[in-house]
Every structure is written in structure tokens, then in C-alpha cells.
Length: 327
Image (tube, rainbow, N blue to C red; front, side, top):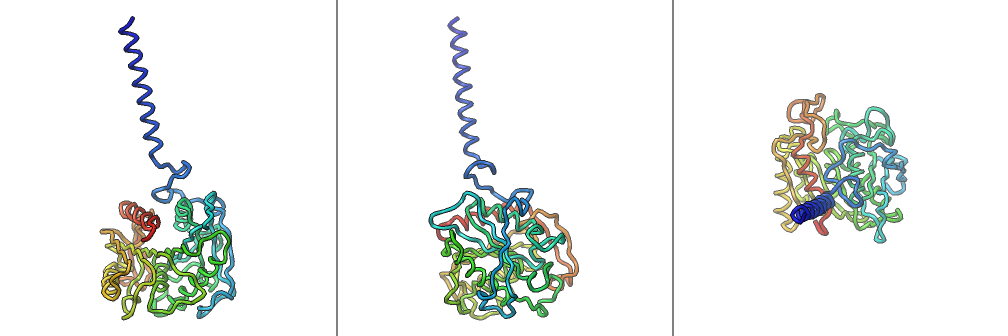
């Protein structure tokens, strides 16, 4: 009997240890449903506006002091993270849409917010950020975008979008429960170009606007900033670009970084270029050609679409940039 008992005891001990090790391993893995776990990337299915509890807000004309053509109110969408209240106040991301605008073709309200914006709002909320998405196009009669307009003909230009950002920053600073010292600008394409406009230190900063803590620009057009002989940064900037982008080419952004660091050696200007990736690489849509775009390199046709490897690397970089005490 003794050998059998020893064997049985050893089996039980091994089973207990194995179970404990499995439990320890499982507890060490971040899962989207676990309390406090942080998702690596937005979920495959973006939550609906109702699931996000999106609030539609109106930013009044009174705070749009820098606007060339201020609408009566600037519509924006406000998302606060559930259960993430902080005694110091929530940090806030001002998320800035691309030239297609905020909406799908299904509508022009919170229910029609694009997949990209809903996915990012959920991902940022999990990291403790409130998110506000100002709509620069809808209040000016162009809710579904300006992509087909030539750059020189656009009346909703960089100066207009910068004014919208400053108004949004003033609005954010007046909200209860936020930390106005921790405002992040995050933009895509045309919205990323607006980020570059806003963090241009060669332009005067309004005394009543809070400062930008850090900024992120996904595949902006860098040509306008590059042409400014005195362009410098008033906030740390992370710029992410696709190596094969034929809409907003990465080489201009590389030249901008070189120029800025020559003028401003201590500036925090990080540029990540993802080889083989196209415009919109952080999404999940298949790579395709888009026609009717007058501002691309290929005479009206550009290439857009997600890149799984670049997407994963970009979100890892973005998470590190946001999580760093000082970028």
C-alpha cells in the first residue's frame, strides 16, 4: 500500500502545483474583461455610441476667440471612462478627425461616429482618459468631409482647425473632474495636420488656453509645417507614418523632424516610420485604392488600409508615449 499511497500523494501534489502555476500564469495575462487590464489595441468590434455612453456637447461661440469663421456652436462628442474617476482629475485626449469627417454615411450624429473613433475612445478610456471629439466639418456644412477638395481651395484649413482645438481646450479646462494640465492632442491625417498647426511654437499661444501636455500625429501632411522657416514645437510630439504612404508621404515628415531638431535640439520630437505601411495603417480595413483625391502623389489615386504589424507596433508605441510620466 505504501508505494501506492506515495504515488497518489505525488500525483495530488503535482496536480495542485500545476493548478497553481496555471492560475498564476492566467492572472498575469491581461484580458479585456479583467479589472484593471489594459487592452493592447482596440477590440475587433468597436462599441456603439450607446455602449460608450457618448454625450453630445456644444462648445459655444464665446470660447472660439481664434476662429476665422466660427460657427454658432462647435458640436463635439464627450466620452468619460466608467469607474476611472481620480481625485487629481481625469486626463483628456482631444481626438481630431481626418478629412472624411467623424461620421459614417449613415448619419451626422453620435450614432454615426466612425469605427476608428469609437474604437479609440474605448481603448483610451481603458487607460483612464476622457475623450472629446470636436466636429470641425458638420457645423460648417460639410459633415462627410473635404477629402476631394484641393488643398489650396479649402476654406476649412489649418488655421480654422487650430481655432477649433483651442476652443475645445478652453471647454475641457472648464469641465469638472478633469486635469487641465494633462491635455493630449491626437489626430489622424487632416486632424494630425491640425495637431502640427497647434503645437507650432512660432505662433503666439492664447493666455487663456491651457497648455498641451503631449501630442500624437498619425500620418499628417507635413508639407505646410516644413515650409515654415521658424516652425518649432511647444509640446512633445510623437509622429507615426507609413513608409509607403502615397497620400501624406513620410519623407516630408522626416525632413520636418530634421529641421525642427536643428532649430530646437532639446525638443521631444519622435518619428516612427513603418516600412511597407500605407495611409490608415492603424485601422483594420483591407488595403485598397481610393480615387478622387487631388492631393495625393499619384494624380488623384491614393492607397489606404490597415497593416497588422504596423498597427500592433503603433499601439505599443502610443501606449508607451501616453504612459510615460514625461514623454
